[in-house]
Length: 291
Image (tube, rainbow, N blue to C red; front, side):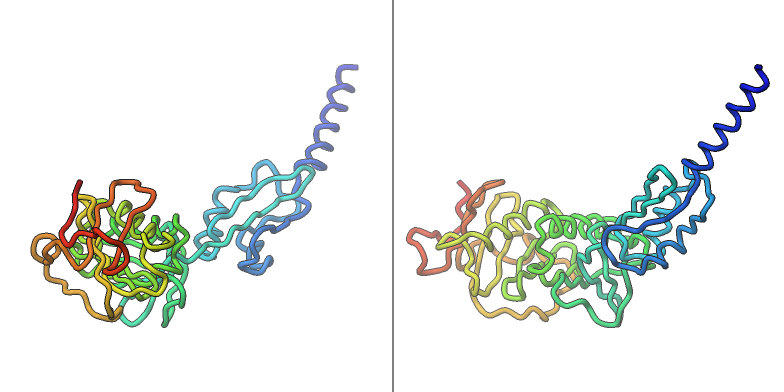
């Protein structure tokens, strides 16, 4: 009686394990960034594999490294017998100039590809010297200050979904970082302090409507480097996005005296920062107002 019950239980367990916990199919869902067969080949799940013991974490990492344009891979089990591989495409955040080629990098710093020309319509970065730049791996910068500043800028631009609006970033001089908006306004960020605040302030100015922001067709220089006083300056005029940035350290405050053609005070997290060119609003001071 007992022996028969044990045999029955063993047989039932074997049948359940065979029917419920064996791989019978693999399905790929999500963004179609690579052919399904290529994704399945890397995972190498076979019919009959134990569904409970397939190495999901290891295969997720392999997909994200070997197929760089996969930003995130999630492998899950569906009883009975199905493995689901969900793929989310990586989004290019910028292109970094390295010699005569360009590295395409996502918002997390992963290199997506190495190409001869930059992708048009996303941020182009110059002035960095990566020591490692293998597709599928995170970019490596030996200069820790440059690495931290680059990460902060790219993450902020990605957060604002403004990779198409901020067109150029020059980091040749870490005391005089330049970020271009639509190739028509040069944003002087100065050094590495409060980069998040500086970029947010500039972004707000470009998206203010009416007299209190920078117009959609205006050109000029927006100096955001005085973050300690929460003061900025906008000087309208023709600008050249291809002009080189000096690599020698500038004088104090980036080599410029405060009080450009137009200036304004901007408190942290202000809802409506302003930058009013001449003739567009009375009472705009010629010297910085710091409250």
